[in-house]
Length: 505
Image (cartoon, rainbow, N blue to C red):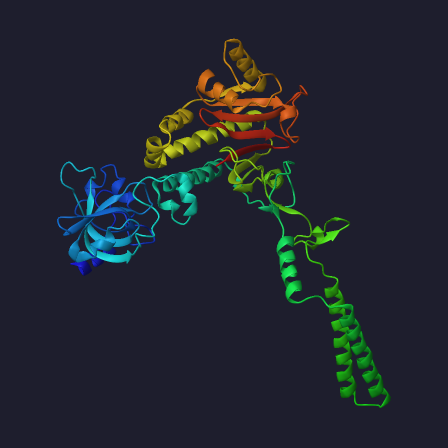
């Protein structure tokens, strides 16, 4: 029966309504293609399937005659219930949380009243990846996220982290799709750079000087540098070898003999040069004129992990018109709040021959596209997030995707905040024209005043970067922030020689 099942699996035809859909580069069936069907998989009853995954929970039943397993393969947050009879494998091993399995079986309808719509009755256990229950760190119960920092290699098996990864994947794919569909060219900018494009000075430095200094220090301890006496002795050998050459020439020795002596003389000279160079070595980072000598570094000058691909991507915009870069950026700001990251991925589009309104149109369309993409393609994961993390996340995604954004100038925003203060609203941060809006100000505008996304533009030049284009009033610059309820700033943009749109994912 098992051999026949394997043969049938290999030759099974695909039909959207009646057959299981196998992975393109594997003979297994992704669990999501079973349980995420509109009918929950019940329409596949009677079909053959090979599934692989990791046991979330397992238990024996009917006096150890069979076992129920909840199998998850990471393709979705849901699990497939798998029933294994005792003659198919060692149930004591199979029920352990974390066990890796590949099994062949038949999809069956469960008894009435069961939560699942379909289950797999195992015909053959193909592979088993054993787990030591005394060492496997992920129990069936919910874990605090901080705990998972110590188990980086396993944290993606948790429901929360795996859902985050699938959502992030969907957002990245949607980002590339959006910009590709709108004629943008994807360009890659350097991760290691010698430029601080934002002038903040809070950058992670990339250097080989420290490693080289440690190697040198270890080497000098194990092989101390030569002394003056060692060098003088090596110089005496040069004199001796030179004398040997002179004697051979005066004796009219053969060219072969003289040549060999000359070689020995040159070796003696090279040895003295090496000894003199080594005697000058000093432990520690090389310095020149009291400063670190970066000319001896790998790049011959200071280098850093990039804080932005902005400078490089601008040059591409000046030849390709509409471009974007999407890659890792790094900030060495010593802050441990949830709004500051040492490493994150940032989307940086550039649009040549555009104005601030064009930027706002692009930003709004992009954010709406991302939200709608999550609603269309990550519904199950978003429902998990709504159940476990943020009950309003789906409603907020729907609102952002469907609602036109409010657009107000910075001056109008300050006037609204000032009016709120006059009406009794209390802010911890004082409100006046020229301040950098605090999170409480942004949340008031989006959650109380408008209850929808807000684009604030034309900021005072004193609180924005030097490279932003000065408006005709000489007081404000062509910059904007996109604010979303319960989130705050998700995009910031400005116009310089061309327009730029940032987004952090």
